[in-house]
Length: 169
Image (cartoon, rainbow, N blue to C red; front, top):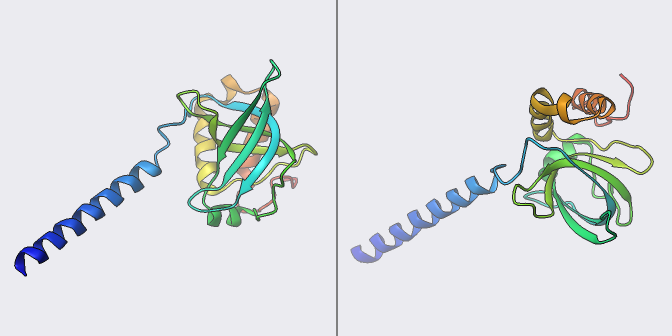
């Protein structure tokens, strides 16, 4: 009986340690190049408004004519809802321009920082994305972005909490 209890305890501790490690790794931004802002224009093929993170699949036509599928990672559903998102904010077939931090290894994957619909509507960002964007703008933004994009990004930081980045301030 004593050996059985000890074995069960050891298994329980091992499972907790494994779960803690994967949770820590899951929330790391180390895979993204937070020093370079990538810009994609494409068509939404899928919008998964799910936890642990929103997933947007995008079809991007390269300059050589080849179409590349991209995966865009967003915030948790609760953070997106707080920013004003719903399941219907993006629809399959919509054309968008996406700004974000790409994978360091060149895979067609990024964490998005700004999404603009074809009609010019800027979609809201969560507080966590706002913090990452503010760090990028303060360090690299003026060097890497056009003056127009820099101003739009600054404006998107200022609207957090209003649920509408398109309103005039």
